[in-house]
Structures are given as structure tokens and as C-alpha cells.
Amino acid sequence: MPRYANIAGTTATYANVNHPVRGVHRNPFPPAKILIVAFVVGWGLAHSTSAKVFWMTSFAEIELGGMRLEKSRAQRILWLLEELKVDYELKTYKRQERQAPPALKKVHPLGKAPLLSVQAEGAAEPIVLAESGPIAEYLIDHFGPQLAPSKWQDGRENQVQGETEQWLRYRYYMHYTEGTLMPYLVTALLLSIIRAKSPFFIKPVANAIAGNITSMFLNPNLDSNLSFLESQIKSSPDGGGFLCGSKLTGADILMSFPLGAAKGRSNFTKAKYPALWDYVDRIEALDSFKKAVQKIIDVEGSYDPSL
Image (cartoon, rainbow, N blue to C red; front, side, top):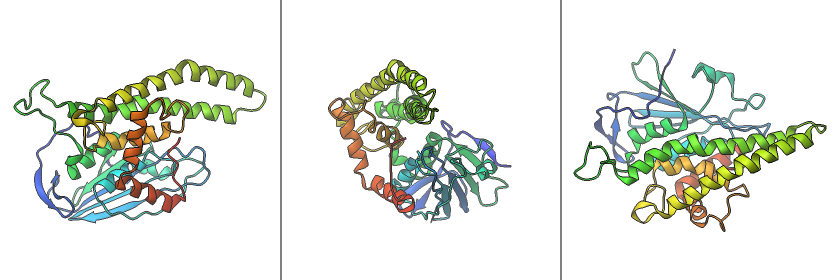
């Protein structure tokens, strides 16, 4: 049975090893073959057909692989792999009655995704990492530390309040994305399902309840968060451009899905939030983002960032 771990915030001593893509990366394992498998499943509530994507790559003595279903926040992990210049192969599978395959419970007891399974050659069992944030942090720690800002101000290493503003923003947004912003978008999704799926004889009541929740709870909170993000983009360090400064980080990659989904809502307009709108356009114009989207289109026939 695999061991389960949450790697966010853990520390270790790493040895530098040559990396044929970036030159150097930090590898916590001894020089041996490592198997990394990522299982990624998305919402897909509005579609009867679906794709589960398996991607695999090899560089040095490391292999990565993964699974994905359509309408999935897994696009962010795909984009991260593209940004890390990782080659991978995609294979498609189908959901079963709009749900992820039961086989995922053989990987993680909850049968949810995304998951990352990591096994070094000679290890008796893999470790399984869950949640997009820890998966992204793991990949960045080992294969793309350039996607995380420097943590310490010069001369203030390991001191309380010695962290850089860029790093504090990075740490915050790696958790804000799923902990604060996504729940409101999920609420919007559920309310839309209630409106669409309620039997006709109770639809007026269901619509009234959903409308009250939207006007009294959902819209005020979405507006508050979008205003906050607008101000954060405007005040970004080093002249801005991205959430944590002038360079792309893992926080921008994780934020791409909820903001892309929010652009489909009436709350989020260019007129109301011009800096935030331009920020989303800017990250979606990056070559690595476009390549990840094209991979999805190649497999599923289209790409829709909305929930």
C-alpha cells in the first residue's frame, strides 16, 4: 500500500545533479530511476464524454506520467510541465457516469485527483501526493526552482520578517487559489446545476433560492476577491506583470484556472477590472500555456476554461 504525504512546507538537503533541459536541478533521491505518476481528474459535470490523459516523459533517469479528465484544473499541471520543458505522451480514457474511474482508489483512498505518485527504483512502495498546490510545489522544488521567488532578503536569511515580498506573495497565492477563490466558483457551478436540473414543478422555487444565494453571498464575495486581485496586480513588486513580480511563478500557473473560469462570468469584465483582465490575457499568451491548451485540444477536440 502506498504511503501518503503532504509535502507542502517540508525541507531537505538536496544534491545538485545535471539536468539535460535546465542544466541543474535539485534531486532528493539517489542517482537511480525514479517513477513519478500524476493522476489528474477534473469537474466534467456538463459532459457525457471525457478524456483521461496519461502523459509520460523521460530525462536523465526520471520518468513522469499522469492522468487527466476534461474540464479539469489539471490543465495547470500540464502547463507547469510545459513550462519546465518536459516532453510527454498523451493517451485518452473515458469517465464512468461522469465520475473518475474507480481505479483511482487503488492509487489514493479518496479516488480523487490530481495525485502525484513518486517511486524511486528499489523503493518498496511509492509515496502519493494529493492536491494541485503540493504537486506544483513538488515539481517546482525538484525540477523548476526558477518558478519560485527568492525567499530571503539579502542579509536577513532565516530571520523573522526576513522574507521577500515576492516570496510571501508566492506562498500566499499557492494556497489562496484553492482555499479562497475556487470555492466561490464551485458554488457558482452548483447553483447553475440547480437551476438547470431542478424538476419543472419546483424550478421557480429553486431559481429563487439560487438567485438569493447569488445576489446575497456569491456576487459580493466574487467582487471582493476580484477587486483585491486587481489591486494586487497593480501593486506587484518590480514593476508587476505577474502576481509576485516581473517573472512568472508557480502561483500564476495555479491562478490561471480560476481566473480563466471567472472570465466567463458577468462579474469579471475588462471595463471593471482592466489590470486583472490584461494579466489573464498575458499569461494565456505565453507559449507554454498555449502548448498545454493545444495538447488538450488534440485529445478532447476543444478547450473550455469555464466550469
